[in-house]
Length: 492
Ligand SMILES: *[C@@H]1O[C@H](CO)[C@@H](O)[C@H](O)[C@H]1NC(C)=O
Ligand SMILES: *[C@@H]1O[C@H](CO)[C@@H](O)[C@H](O)[C@H]1NC(C)=O
Ligand SMILES: *[C@@H]1O[C@H](CO)[C@@H](O)[C@H](O)[C@H]1NC(C)=O
Ligand SMILES: *[C@@H]1O[C@H](CO)[C@@H](O)[C@H](O)[C@H]1NC(C)=O
Ligand SMILES: *[C@@H]1O[C@H](CO)[C@@H](O)[C@H](O)[C@H]1NC(C)=O
Image 1 (cartoon, protein in one colour):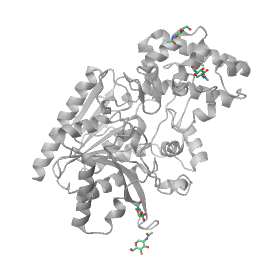
Image 2: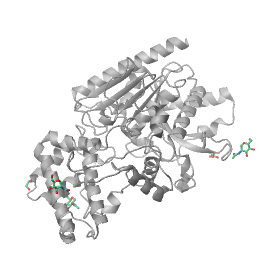
Image 3: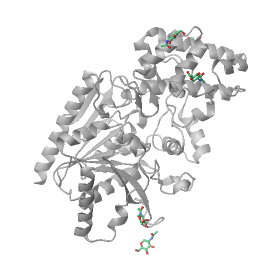
Image 4: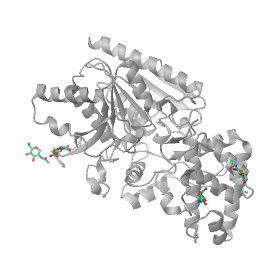
C-alpha cells in the first residue's frame, strides 16, 4: 500500500514537472478492479501506443491503449535498473502472477518492474472486438510488438526519471523469444535479456519436426517406460475402434458429449487427447499451479499413476486427460470441439480471443510444424507439414506463411555477434530442445535446469523447488547484476 502511494505521488510530481497535458491520458488507470488473487503491488496502467510503427501513411498517427503493470516499491529511484517483461500470448496478469522471480530479484537489486502486454492480447486490442477481422489483424507482428516495447520503455524512462537506469528484459516461452529479439534489435535500449524456455530455433524452422512430441513422450517414459506403453496401447485401441467405426463405444469409453461420426471427429479426439499430455509435460512443476490450466503437483507422475491404475486402457486414458480437462471435477462429459481448438500450432493455441491472435502469429511468422508419428513418440501419426500449414492459413486468415522469415529477421542460430543474453531451459520442458542449450560465448550463456519444466526459473521461490532451479536463479541474479553494473559504469 505504502509503495503505491509513493508511486502515485511520484506520478503527480512527474506530471507537474513536465507540465504537459498529454500525460494524464498516458497515465490512465484501469477502472476495472484486478481479479482476485492478483498481486496488489502492481498498478495496472494503459499506455498510448502507436498503431503502426512502420507505415506513416495508412494509419497516420493512430494509437491504441496498451496495458502494462508496474511496481516501484523496490526501486532505488532514478538509479536502480528497470526489469521489463516482454509480454507474450496472453493476459499480462497471467505472466505477472507466474513470474515471481522478477519481483524477488527487483527487491534485491532495487529495480523498477514493468510487465507489458503484447498487442492483440488481453486488454490490448487495437481495434477492440473487431481486432481479429481480416482487415484489422495485419498489425499483429513480432516487429510491431518489439517496437511497442522499445517506445514504451523509452517514454516511461523519461517520464519516471529513469533515463540512467539500465534495462533488463525478461520473458518466458514466446516472451523469452521477444526478450532475445529486443536485445539484438534494440541494444541501444536494452542492456541484457533473460530468455527462459525460448524456442528460438524450432520456431524459426531449425531442428526436426518430431522433436516436440518426442520430448513430451520422454517425460512420461522417463517416469516409467510402462506409462508410455500404456498410452500407446490406448491410442492403438482407439484407432482399431475407429477403423471399425464403433463410434458408440468410443463415445462411452471417453465420456464424449456427442458420438463421433467421421474421420474428422476422430482426428479432433486424437488432438484433444494429445494436447493434455503436452500441457502436463510443460507444466510438470513440483507443486500445484494454475498457469495455462489448473495442474496438480508433478502432473506427469499423477498422469502415469492414473494411466497405470486403470483396468481398461481407454477409460484410463480418459481419466488421465481428465487431469487437465476435468480439473474441477465438474465435467459431466467432454465436448471435443469446445475444450480443444485445432489451429496452426499443434501444441495448442488455447481458447478465446488470445487463441485467435496466437493462431494468426503461427500462420505468419512463428513456425510450428511439429508432428507426432507413433515411432519416435507415443501419439498417433498426426503430420503437420508446411503445405498443410499454408492450406489452413490461407483458408482461416487469408495469409500465406513465409517460412524462413523469422530466421532471417532474428538471426536463427547465427548469434555470434549478439551479447548479454541468458538462455535458460528446463530438462523436462518439451520446448527446451528447440532453444539454445549450450553457451555460445562469454555473454551468451545457456543455463540448463535438471528437473525444470517450462520456465520454472521465472516462477517465485517455493519450498518444493529442486536445488537445480535455486542454483539457476542465483546464477541469473549474479549475471544480471554484472550487466547492470557494467552498463552503469559506461553511462556515468
Ligand atoms: C483516459 O481517460 C480519459 C478521461 O477519462 C479519456 O478521455 C481517454 O480516452 C483515456 N485514454 C486512454 C489512453 O485510455
Ligand atoms: C495526425 O496528426 C495530424 C497533425 O496533428 C492531424 O491533423 C491528423 O488528424 C492526425 N491523424 C490521425 C489519424 O490521428
Ligand atoms: C487407483 O485405483 C483405486 C481403485 O479403483 C483407487 O482407489 C485409487 O484412488 C486409484 N489411484 C489413482 C492414483 O488414481
Ligand atoms: C469429472 O470428474 C468427476 C469427479 O471425479 C467425475 O464424476 C466425472 O465423471 C468426470 N467427467 C468426465 C467427463 O470424465
Ligand atoms: C503405432 O505403431 C504400431 C506398430 O509399431 C501399430 O501397431 C499401431 O497400430 C500404431 N498406432 C497408431 C495409433 O497408429
